[in-house]
Every structure is written in structure tokens, then in C-alpha cells.
Amino acid sequence: MGTLDKVRSTLRKPVKYTQAVLRWKRFNFGEAPPIFANSKPKSGSHLLLQIMQGVCQVAPYTYVESDPIRTVKATGGRNTADSILTTMKAIPTGAIGWGYVDPTPENVAYLCQPGRINYFTYRDPRDLLVSHVYYATSMHEGHGMNKLYNSLTDFNERLKIAITGIDRDGMYMVNISQRYDGVFEWLKQPHTLCLRFEDMIDDQDNTLRLILGEFDKAGYKLPISEDSALSSLREAIQPTKSHTFRKGRTGSWKDHFTEVHKDLFKQVAGDLVVRLGYEKDNNW
Image 1: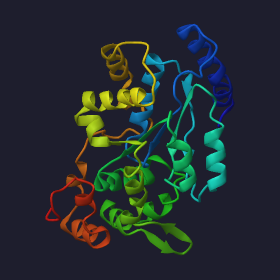
Image 2: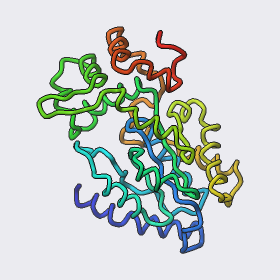
Image 3: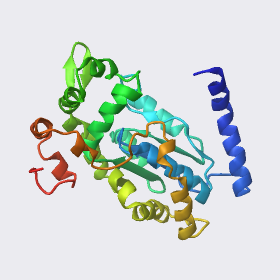
Image 4: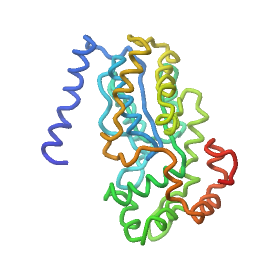
């Protein structure tokens, strides 16, 4: 991080807090329910983040935290369960936290308490794989798979590794079936609103209404009308401003999966896309 970026990072929170004080004409921001915006990596987290920035315009929140809380570090390896929970508990009152955390008993117990709001986004595993390969190969040089992917001949070979995972020569990455174990656990949680990335793109207004509906469930009445709130959330969505934005559309896996990839996916993951509701059967 350069000097200018460090200065911006240092000033961001007090500036955002001051803006919130002026906007909401208050110094106390403990009235609205705590929010954590959680996501499967490469599954719409930055779209959800923009929606959360819109939430700061419709309810008295100070700001959205600038950095995500991660289970897997950006450079590889895992954060400890204690450090993840401690970091979540340290989110300031009135700030919206976000990240990529697993449904461990400790995380579920903390995030899914009554009176809190917990969102979780996921997407079609096939689209996740395509997004992951592009990101790790071309957009994030520090990614743990960057060197390996760039040593392979083409996208097809990289996609095969992404499907099967890897465990050799000191490199480890779970396969696509294992990636989704946590998704099913979040789907079981009654105090978590699970959102499909596809619905956030293709059925946006209904999805935004579901997001706003969580405030009622938490016992909090928004200070503005639903129509005004919807308008603010729509205005906040600007996908091209995300540094990870590539195409922002659904179903692009069809442009990349060959019959070999389809067969390999089914061997590794079985009927995963059927269980997630993306296909009626496994004859895709």
C-alpha cells in the first residue's frame, strides 16, 4: 500500500462517520440492527457490498467496512477461527461488516442471533469456476493459484484443475463439491437470508425487497418508505466500479465448458447443480 493509499485508509472512517452524523443528525448509531454481508468468494460479494452502501442511505449506519473478513487469506492459508470471530465482534457499532466466512458453529451462533441481519450470496458453481479461473490467472497476481494457472497451456486446462482441486507439491485447493459444503450449511440457517447472484442480476427488484424485508424481521422500521429505499439501493448498484468486475452476467459457463469439463464436473460433484436448483436433472 502506497503512502497516499495509507492516508486515505486512515482518513476514511472518520470522514464517513462525519458524513453519517450530518446525514442522520445524530451521534449514536446503535439503533439499527447489526448487519453482516457474507458471501461465497466470486459470487457477487462486491454487488452485495454496493447494496450495503445503499443501505447506509436508507437507515442510520455509518459506513461499510473497507476490508472483508476472510476465512481464506488473499495470499493463501487460513485465518484461525478465533481471529475471525474476534474481528467480527470488533466491527464498530453502526458499521456494516462484510466478508467470506464459513458456517462454523461459532460464526453461526454469533451472526444468526435474533436482532441481527445476516446476508449470504452464492452462485451457480459453474459460473463461479469460470470467474475464479479468470480472477486467479489475470486479475490477482498474488493469488495462490496464479503461478500454476499461468504455467498451464490454456483456459481449458486451468478449468479442469479448478473443478478437481489440487493437492500436490505443497499446493492445495479443494474441489468444486467441497467448495459448496458451506453453502448448504448457510442455506439451513433460518436467520440468514441466502441470495443467489443470478437473482441479484436478473430479478433485482424482488431481491432488493427481500433484503429490505430483513429489517422488519429484526424488529426495526426503516425511517423512509419502501419505494424510496428501493430507489436508493438501485442507485447504489454500479457493477463496473468493482475492481473485480469482468462481465457481471449469468450463465457464462456455457461459453467455456466443453463436454470434457461437463463430464469431469459431474464425476467430481455429482448432482450439485440440481441440489442447488440450477438444473432439473443432471443431463445438462
